[in-house]
Picture 1: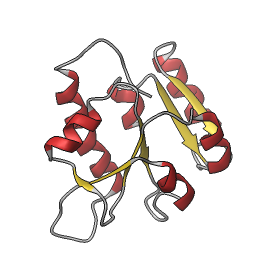
Picture 2 (picture 1 turned 30 degrees about the vertical axis):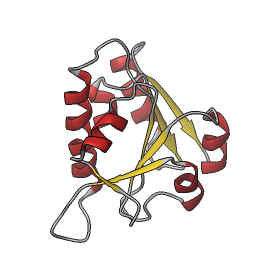
Picture 3 (picture 1 turned 60 degrees about the vertical axis):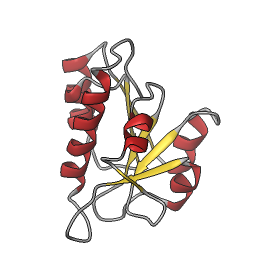
Length: 140
């Protein structure tokens, strides 16, 4: 819902999710034709849909993750053509999707992790700030 309501993205992809068709149709009607909502039944079908040369960034705890508040992460999130991947609360992001991501970003925290919706809201705030520097296009 946050991705749709933020109006920062041109498309929202739902992969192997339990979001109902009824909810998807409601969000599509509320935001059409501004945002395209596409459902994929598997991570493999999602990855086949994404052009190979596209930049993918995952929100994920990892030793190779960049701090969300670093200048490097800000520059990456400023890219209007990136695909931002947010994993499920309980299972995270599938390994095959993480392997395809060029970069990972994490939110510095005193605890082991941050709730997915809160983490995504933090990333949206940084994207929103980045968009103030360039308002020409929306991202996927």
